[in-house]
Length: 299
Image (cartoon, rainbow, N blue to C red; front, side):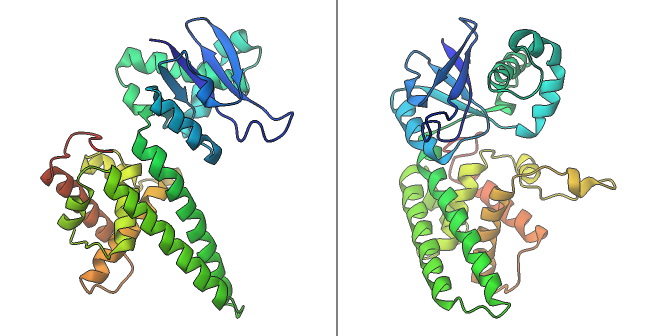
C-alpha cells in the first residue's frame, strides 16, 4: 500500500512564488512538491500534518471520493519533542535539524513508523471522513462569525452603537448553525436519536449545532478520554493550568449544547465544569443507547 506524508501549506497557488505542499514518499525515499492534494493519485494513504487550511477541504473531498484514505496528525504540541528526538537523523537526511518543509514531512513518517511499531498509530493520526469534510468547514465559519459577534457585542458595552451589526451577525450565526444541523442530520448516524435522548427538539438549533460540533471533533466514546480531551479536569501543580492541553474548540461546542439543556430545564446560569461533565456523560450514554458505543463509530 503506497503512502505519502505531507507538510501542508496555506493556499500554495495564490502567489507565483508561494510554497507548495511538500511530501515524503518513504518507499521511493524521495521528496515531492505539489500544488494540490488531489494530485496524489498513486497513493492509497495520505498523512497530513495538523494544519488543514480552508482552501484544502474541496481537495480532500476529491481524495475521499476517489477512495483515498486521508489521516491528519493529532498532536501538534509534540513537534518540538519529535524534532529533538530525531535531530541527528533529520540533519543527515535533510541537511538541517530546525523546522523545514522537507523535515516536517520526513518527521511525520518517522512518527508513523514509530507508532506503527508500538501499535498506537491511532493516538497520533486520525482518519478524515466525509463527515469531517462536509461539517468542519461549516463549523469553522460558525466559529469565525461567532467570534466577530462577540467582538461587536463587547464594543456595545463601551457605548459604541453597533445594534445593526449585531442583528446582522446574529442572523448569520443562526443561519450557519441551521446549515450545520441540516448536514449533521444527513451525515451523522442516529444524530436525531442522540438529540432526543438529550431532550433536544428540532427547534433547538443552538443545542443541535453544539451537539454536531461535539460529535465531529470528539471522536471518542469513552467518558474519561473525552473529559481529558475537553479539559474538564482540575490541573495539578503550580503551573498546571498553563500546561493543561485540551481542545478549546470542542469545549465551546459542549458549552453551547450544555447552555441549551440548562435553559430548557429552567437552570438560568452559565454552565459550570460540573454541568459540562454531566452533559458530556449524557452524550456518551446516549451514543451507547442508540448503538454507537464503539470508538469512533458514526463520526
